[in-house]
Amino acid sequence: MSGVFLVKHWLKDSSPLVRDTFSAVPLLSNPKASEKGVRYFEKDLNRCFTLGHPIVSYSPDDPYEVMRAKEINRMFGPRGSANAYDMMLDLHNTTSNMGVCLIASGVQNAVEMHACHYIQVITLGFPCRLFVLFPDPLQKRTIQSLVSWSRCGFELGPQPQGVVRADILQKMKTLVEVTLDFVNYLNKGMEFPAFETDIYQYAGEVDFPRSSDGEISAVIHPSLQDKDFSLLCPGDLLFLSLDGKSIPYSGEKPLHPVFINEAAYYEKKIAFILAEKIQVSVPALRRQTH
Image (cartoon, rainbow, N blue to C red):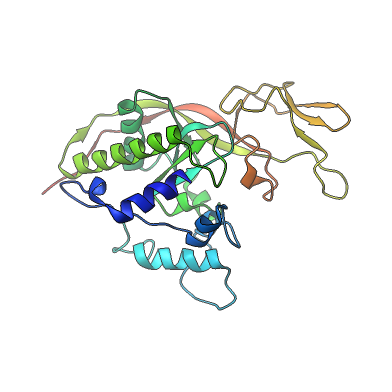
């Protein structure tokens, strides 16, 4: 609920969101879910923003979150149009031990990459890992996420839905403020030099082992639990069955597990996501002011 608390505060006093060159607009994206302290009311809102999803036409049979996605598109879009907002920040929590995780849509967007790098450089008090969701830009058409609409997002954990932690709330507040400062400097024509950085790039998903009836037959192994971003090598233990049998990782190469045991992923049949740590080069960035 950290993002919810921050947005409610900014709706009453938006002065912290004002900069010389722009003002940010706070939005409580899912009011019904916020009232109940749950992730969503009928359908995961974070899965209603894919480019393939009908976000213009309306139907009385639409779930509440689909209607909200269409309303958000109307208020801040339409997506892809000249009137669409240039940047949206998605404030999320996770039950996984992700720490502070910046989520970018892809390395091709220089503004997005420089914004994340600026955050990493400025917020020296805690590590900020960068997870890139779309290695291939075409994936934005198939993977459903608000990040496919927004410029970047923040994911902080471990923090379950319905809970506020002061430490995570303060970090999220800092991330937003630093990002707004970056945009303000960019608007004023500041040049950001080229850089190289490590990213964790989406490389696939792993489901829980399941029985013939589709039920989960093994859970995350204790040696893997809370080890988000650690290096997972072939042979390392992944799951533990209820009868005590350990199931190892059988992948062809070492990768990094993220979103381990994320509560919102059970219904999506995802035990964790795999990521590949790579180094990328990002060119210099400067916005022309005239």
